[in-house]
Image (cartoon, rainbow over all chains, first blue to last red; front, side, top):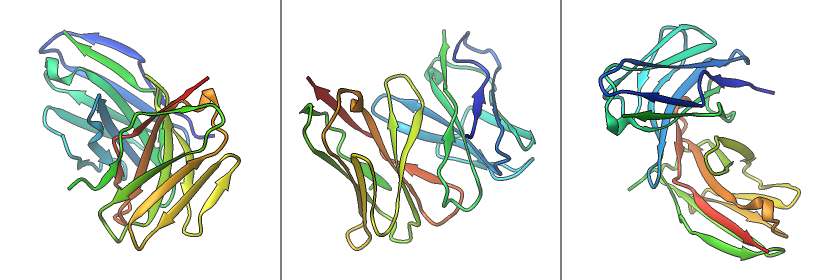
Amino acid sequence: DVKVTQSSRYLVKRTGEKVFLECVQDMDHENMFWYRQDPGLGLRLIYFSYDVKMKEKGDIPEGYSVSREKKERFSLILESASTNQTSMYLCASSPPGGRQPQHFGDGTRLSIL
Amino acid sequence: RKEVEQDPGPFNVPEGATVAFNCTYSNSASQSFFWYRQDCRKEPKLLMSVYSSGNEDGRFTAQLNRASQYISLLIRDSKLSDSATYLCVVNFNTGNQFYFGTGTSLTVIP
């Protein structure tokens, strides 16, 4: 079974802090994704990566950056956290080509105070 | 217009009922279709892929109508444990991006 592991289930940070969310997958998938999910808005893509050191902006990249130094790890960075970034963050991975489904990590519920 | 649209519900059905959800998509070049289930405060989990000829997994049946650009999910003999949000997901032949509906909420009532 695919295993996608996110570093924290719950996280509380303060406004202005730099926040790192880590995601690791064990299936050698080329594609990795970061989403946020908010009530009534569904899943929104922040960034995705289709290879090491490659990244593409999703629908809502503002205020975020990503890093993919190794194939199995994809990090999401909140450069200067703000209260409107309080959300559920979901990492996913998939093989290339889009014909196989994504697999999700457990999610990180992030609160910015 | 959103790329993928679902009726948010909620659908409240009695145990044993049959319930169906539809999901419409905007891009006729779409290549891959999936249904996910998401429990409250949990991550989405793959329920089933949707194949062109339609496919069945136990009480669940998924169908694709390319001409009308929608996919459907039918749940027969609903169980209390089927209560969840069901997400429709489409890949638009770009290979790397998946588009999600906002989900349909189902509650199965005893």
